[in-house]
Image (cartoon, rainbow, N blue to C red; front, side, top):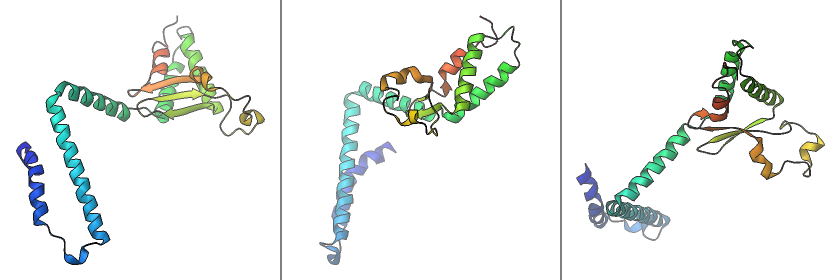
Length: 188
């Protein structure tokens, strides 16, 4: 298989000499279209040849790039979404209801109460960043039409955005929710 792939770039020039364009298509858009695709194929063939020689010249650099690209692809595939957050929040709420108040971790209960309040008010928002996701709060619901929602002087600044982030999701898990509610049944 690999030997056949190595021979393909050498076979293309022989195909080009065998293929002749009919005289009636000379100088038309069909010939320009064929030339475009032929040049595109030649460019990509040259790029693949250069890539092969670069990999042979510096295999450690190629391995680093390959591992980096595969890591980014895996993170993108396992990027949690808003539904995952809501499902996890509901599951933890259902588990916390079963725990006695004498054993309940107050920090976990307060965090869940805050998230539920924000969720019910519509002030909890989701953003996907490709390889990670964030959940953040806002002062008002997105459908709110008060003056405070439109006035630029009372809008939160970009610098305060980091303080409004509630959770970060990466690798298929919402990490702040996981960390704060891991020991919800151990009183601290």
